[in-house]
Length: 186
View 1 (spheres, rainbow, N blue to C red):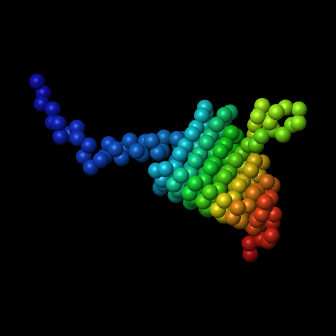
View 2: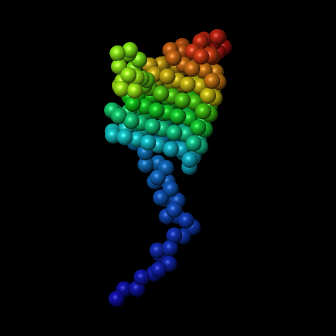
View 3: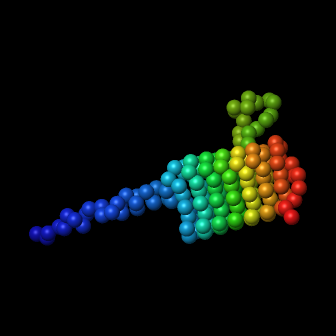
């Protein structure tokens, strides 16, 4: 009868626990670049054929929440992008975040809304599904809300607590609710 080295079954230095933790943290990504950092309290809820792809050097801070629900949601995050603390990213269709993007804390990015017809109770109306496109080199200030069917151009800056309901041009600085362009980066 063969001898079994019981020491080989031990969890030396917590390796097994680290592997299990890494699996739980990264299993949601359909593609992930190098140096991905996902803080332990980040949360992911994905349904159906959800796609979540991130580039190199992406950081997702504590308590950020990603919800990808039906029908076929896709979220793409480019290289060198930071998703701040307590962000909510909710996709039913497509959210694309470019390279070198800084997203402050408590930001919400949502690619869908709700029907507003008078002839049907609001709670019975289906979601209206759109998209969000965020260009490269964008800075989104803390507490901002990015709503559906919006494109934020390359180099744009969105002020803290702003609500973006329409397209923001390249290199524009937009603030307020709804967000309006006040000037351009020089």
